[in-house]
Image 1 (cartoon, rainbow, N blue to C red):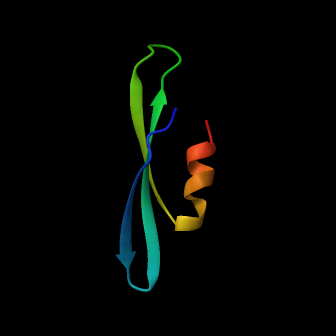
Image 2: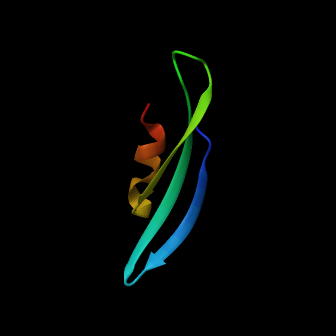
Length: 50
């Protein structure tokens, strides 16, 4: 289960995207958020990973 929240960030000439994914912990069952800043082409790959 992934929550897709994407914001565009621009630094210099590079264009970056911040993606936030909601991940369920197998031990406690609680949800945590994993954040990553990457290029826009890699967002779908990041969200597809478990």
